[in-house]
Amino acid sequence: MRHRTPLAATLAANSISTAGTSLTLIGVPWFVLETTGSAGRAGVVAFCATLPVVFAALIGGPFIDRLGRRRVAVASDAVCGLAIAAIPLLHRADALEFWMLCALMALNGFAHTPGNTARYVLIPDLAERAGTTLPRAASLFDAVSRGARMAGAALAGVLIAFAGSETVLLLDAATFGLSALLIAIGVRGVGAAEPRKAEAPVSLRTYGAELREGYAHLLGNRLLLAVVVMVMFMNGTDQGWNAVLLPVHAEAELAGARDIGLLTALYGAGGLTGALLYGAVGHRFSRRTVFTVSVMLCGAPRYLVAAMTGTTLPLAVTMLLGGVAGGMLNPILTTVIYERVPDRLRSRVAGALTAGCEFAMPLGGLAAGLLVEGVGARGALLAMGGVYFLATLSPLVFPSWRTMERPEEAAANGSGKGPMEAAAESSGKGPEEAAGREDSVDGKPSTPAEVSSSAPSRRVPAP
Image (cartoon, rainbow, N blue to C red; front, top):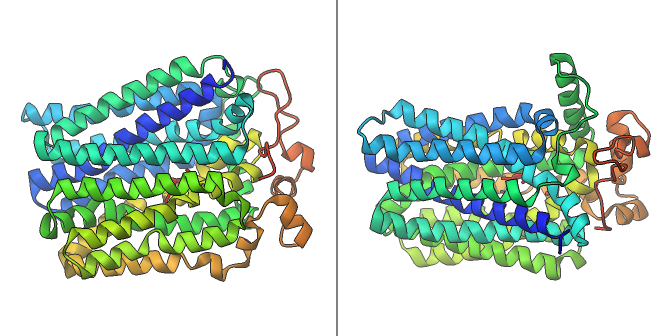
């Protein structure tokens, strides 16, 4: 049981943090619409909240390794909690200016990314300590996150309707504090979570070299690059949906914040179901087939249904089914990424992946707000949904997706290289060096990223 505690604590902390993020996802746009009445300003706030996410991901990988994954996760949640709590407190004091709201959301976005990355890259090591397989741990990580997202969304809708958006933001701040406490206590003593003692002295030159190493690994693997490009467009349009399109649609056509919470919770419930289904039986089937079907069903239909109907039921059914499809995606992507990235590079490559996958998110919220004010809500829904649909055609078009199957299967059918070969090609080292066996964290050699035979984001960060 002692070896399972760090994994359980990390899963619990991530679920609590994710639930809080759902509160922010609904509470902040509704707060902006309540206080300003402007979809354009909601888009500006979304832009300010997500642009620092990309910047933090671009530069954060080596920083996470040097400071330690546990410390980064704790500090990240603490800063996010203070930034979110300041919004309702300043508003109640009648001191909150619009630029302050933008600045606080920017600080939240900048601080949130390193913590997410730190928790994410710990999962393979914690799964090995707990004696569970990587696909099962990846599915569990995604399942509890989606369940938390569902619960947070439902709670946000109810609280906004009965207590106001300010209460939602205060509760969100409290969830960050609890997440930080769980990581601080539950992951203590885990070698992979502590600072890398053997790193070269800090300097701009060494920091830049470490960043380049992570990006070189990503650019040297065509499958990971294809994942980044596709998820970048999906996350960008999703940001427009969450920050602007759904709140505007709910305010004009549905029952307001209550229906936002209901719809987001249904999508989360579907996602939880999909993640659990994949962990139970989905991993027995072709990864590429499951992924291709799921990615085409998970997002684009909801934009079309929202544009064509003004009632809750059709959109609710669409989002529930889309959530089931979406729940299949992250366990697949997470497993693929863990297989192809050695532990020594995991934080750096995860930062590069996050930066790429979330690169379009600042523009997504801003574009959605401008589209609503320019062509109306229906036109904006159709335009953003069209972008989403085109992005999800990628697995059918580009041959690099054929290498998504398990490394041994890909090698057997000649469809691609195994993860160690890819690491060796991108780093210029032999397979054992690229796997990170020359590095050591806690007195024993680092192991390759795959700990069994089997992601955006956002996670790779989840779509």
